[in-house]
Amino acid sequence: MTYLVVNGPNLNALGHRDPAIYGTLTLEDIQDRITRKGKELGVELSFFQSNSEGAIIDHLQQNGPSCEGVIINPGALTHYSIALRDALADLSVPIIEVHLSNIHAREAFRRRSVTAGAVSGQIAGLGWRGYLAALEYLVEESSNN
Ligand code: DQA
Image 1: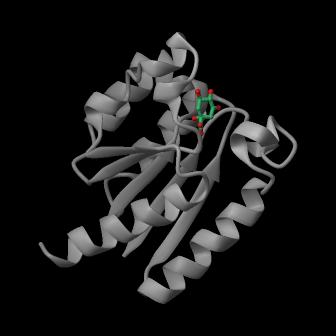
Image 2: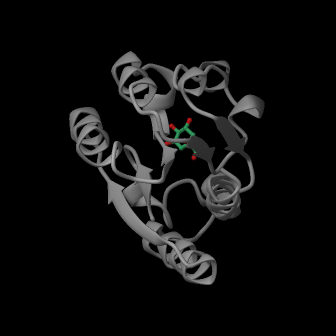
């Protein structure tokens, strides 16, 4: 029962990147919290971050089909990557798109997600807790099926 947690461009800079918007936790801090939640729920997690669109797509193609579900924060790819959307649409496992910030309350270019139409649901604006909410949802959902 492995869940993929995928983070896109610039999320490796969390901690010092726009802390008023993204908070002060580093990606490692957030991954530690997700790991703790995973232990509580009794599931395995696999973390991946890349600044490269192609590397993320390769990762999803290689690991997506055999996983239980995907949590993805595509970063700025959210707003323009049709290639990522197509890769997500090709997976049959449940996928939750997470954004630390409320993209709908920010600049106009952030309000459009081209990836959202290819996922089960989106969580935006809950900060790092959004990843935990996504994991809880995915685990509960898969135990009901
Ligand atoms: C983000 C929102 C995106 O617009 C931005 O490009 C990011 C982070 C978020 O988590 O709020 O890199 O996905």
